[in-house]
Every structure is written in structure tokens, then in C-alpha cells.
Length: 363
Image 1 (cartoon, rainbow, N blue to C red):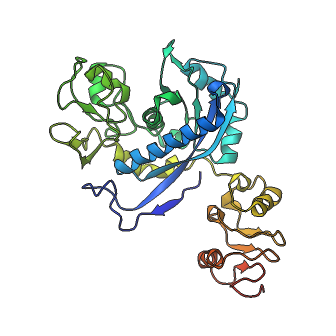
Image 2 (image 1 turned 60 degrees about the vertical axis):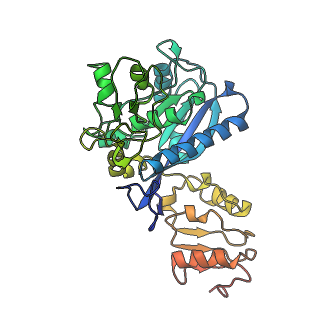
């Protein structure tokens, strides 16, 4: 998806925590493919939107400069129940997942997420599974290596955890100690791991905790997963929930925030959306893009010509990040503030404005 940045200016991120970065967020797109058996589509859309909002809060509170956005929610019949089988169906675009990668390309989906409450892991009810722990730049930027499935009942924590695997993060060294030889600390980099304090007796003790990528593995330590904090590991973050030292990571073995920020551009580099799939407030502007520019990616659209269309609202045009010039001549009057913002962005002489424009008569 296109990389879009929101400047943070002088804002202090993560509640002004020490070492929190000041900069700009990189946005990436998620397409959800939901089992038709999930019931109310409106309720499911609302639940997924809430999960993505929470995911973005995790990034913010962890001093990670990423923002997820939903580019599409579609419904299909997900026939398989076992996670590995669902992922295989996605990879091979079969049984409910036809044209999966074409749609990812069209919608600008960096990650495709299947959602079903019937999910099983090795025959038992489960929360989620990613295609892999991606460990190379090629895999991180690959649409076909960016697939996951989760049970939406399990919530945003599972979404964040499984996306983390696709972004190169792994469970960490405490989990590796609890289950040796399973590769729980084999991540994108030595520091791209979750961070936890505890032992493997399954008995809760004061000061034991784990960050997001430790996730459900806290059951090995605490007997439950309630000490799994809504943070990615970051040794620059200090929080009373993070053990006796109140430090939420380790620079050598548990600094997922660093790994995520270093590779943010790769997470947004998979697909560019076609301009006709983007939402616009003005139906006439939407129709113009769908009729004249269908199938054209936003990076290729430099001149937008929509004369005599009756366009009166430019809300959403900021999504067309490669525009050099526009032609809205013959359209209805457009609010002056919108035109001025667009003129400031494109430069002088780049707009053929609509009737009654505060920018003057079209050349």
C-alpha cells in the first residue's frame, strides 16, 4: 500500500515516555476476508474496526510509528476449520479465496486476514495463526507471505500478535526456555522478540509479565494469559506493569519497537490501491474516478480530469498522493478552504477550478 505519513510535529509519543520517537507514522492496509457464518455483517465490521483501533493504540503506546487501516471487509464461505488448511487455501486462492491476490492488488492490501470463529489449531479451538515468522526483507514485502487467520472473538491482542509474526517478530527467550527447540526466539533480528519476566511453572508470582508477542504463551508462566501486556517490547519504555525493574524490554533480545520502526517501509510496500477503490465524499467525484480511471494505481495518476461533473466536495482527494494537476471546470462551487488547500499542495496554475471559485476564472 502507499506509504502515507502523519507528521507528529513536536508531539511526545506514548505519553512522553523516555525514548519515545517523534516523527511520522507509516500506514499499511488490511483486507479482512470474513466467514459468512459470522452473522451480522454490520456487527462484524464494527468489531473489526474496533480491533484495528486498538491495534493502533498498541503501536502508539509502544512508540511504534505504524498505523493500520482497513481497506476492505469482504465475506465468503470459509470451508476449512484448521488454521493451516485455511492458510493453504488462501495461498492457493481456492475454496472461498478466489482472486485473493488480485483483490489485494486492487485494494492496496498489504496484509490479508481471514476471520472465523470456527478456527481450530491442531483440532482444538484456537485464536490465530500467521503464515510464517517472516525473516527476510523479501518475505516482509511479499503479498503471498502476508496472510493470517484469527478468531475475532479473541480480540485485538491476537490480531496484533499474528501480524507481528508477519512483520518478523517472535515470542522470545522466556517462551524458548519453556519450550526449548521450537525456535520461539528465531526472529527477523536478535532483538525482534517479545520480552517477559518469569519462569515456566504455570504459577503466578509477583512481577511476572510478558509483552504482546509473548501473548498466550504466558499460560506457560502464569497459568493464564492475563499478565500479557498490551505493549510491544521496547527497553526505552518504563511502566510499573513491567516487572520489578519496570523496563519493558531488552536492547539485545527484546526490542520489537526498534525492529518495527526500522522496517516500517517494507510493511507498506506490498500493494498500491487502484484509484477507483478509494472512498470519496462526493458521489460525482467517485463516479468520475470509477469511469475514467478504473484499474489505475494511485502512484500513476498525475492529472485528474473531471470537468462538467457537478463536483462540490473534494473530501478524500488527499488520498491521490501523486497528483500534479486537476481539472474541475464546469463543476459546482467548491468550498474555498478545500480549493486553497489543494492549490497549496499542487502549486500555482495546477487547478482548473469550478464555477464561482475563489481561485479565479479557469485559464
